[in-house]
Image (cartoon, rainbow over the protein chains, first blue to last red):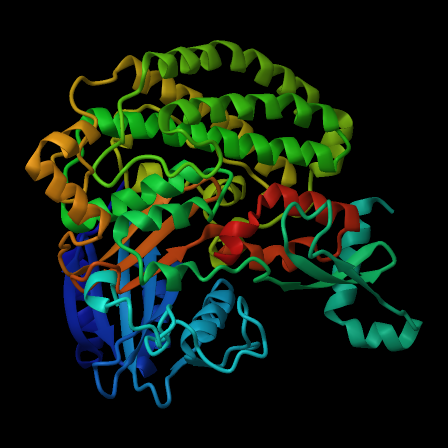
Length: 168
Length: 412
């Protein structure tokens, strides 16, 4: 299978978007880049239409919460892949927890619909332009976003179990 | 007017629904299919809008068996998450288990001995066979052929017997460990595998003859619930459902893991992406899986069945009682105190229904900082309304079973 290297991919991406690529690293064989939330649609669209890279498949969208990063607590993580070139790419966009919003990819990928609904459901990321952004796995009446770190899994009033021994 | 043109007209009509409604005073019926219904094979609900017996639109709800695995995983040590993965696609738990082990092994950087990799391949391919057997047998049931189902289910039980002899469990297997397998295959396992390989192809041939060129079955499944390759990719299809649409993407070939590059096998693909193609792709994949198992058995390397990672792989019980170091490791593993490096891993395996991905963020703590499962069912199930629009209700049922949506994987 013909493939392109991660170095080539990153170089081409930086050539095209320059400033918008804020940080880049390679973790366990996948290039991981940090981008501005506003530029996600442009970048994914360009990746899709570029004649050399051909990233025509959206693998996954999920969220993540980093309470310690002030001003960019919520992270949206995108995995895209190019089946023809057999290479994957991870895009991460950090947003403030007070108002996490990012353009929706539903205009480009039908698969983004539920992935974004799931991410909204658990992290409260507002995907702008999503046709039907409502909860998908949790009950509709829920008024919080359960995968955020401020919700401990165990009863917080318990004192007999110390985090030091039994995890966070 | 034959059925296809009728369908095409209907699709056109739904596209310009408003005008037609006012012209002809058509009233649609709302039909609730599910959440528990014998035809849905799992707990998911579809609210169908029907024009007579023809599906105009469908609205899906899911989340009925959502168990918050991603949240629970954030509090569990790595080895305890294996039991959560069991309950994703419970028709092929070993693939999920081993996929998870491989994700952690990637993070901690362990090389697994060849023998363990081959043993894993055998286990995973048996899991794939059992998954595909259930799916195809159920397509038979939904088209009115119960015989194949009852006949093949015995053989799924025989696969579960093999799993039972390998790890002690049948359905939710919790098979293997981080770093290898918990024990070597016993002579009994080899005996059972060889019996299966000798007897199953004959039985499977009978099942194939029953359905593959059966006129009734063909007419019921051909051109029902079709999807083009382009739409399938846009909807994030992977696995047999994508291959039925004609795209030869298979994680085992694209990004080989666990020594899949050593084996010689084909990727079967379909043409129309309809129910019949999905059925035939799974049929062909069962043959390919049998081929892989035979090759793995014939070329089984000598060596150990676990890697040298004492901080993750539980020592043998007699060592724990008699050896200080083993006792310490045992304690540390059970309490989940083994150190892991920081990092972000994405690892994908070819599950029964498609690319099963694990996105794992580790901050060096005893539990994952973040774990996300890329569940193929969750992603391709959203194409279902588009696939059944304009078809008959009974076609919608067959399409649903041929997609093989597993509720556990859908809802995580």
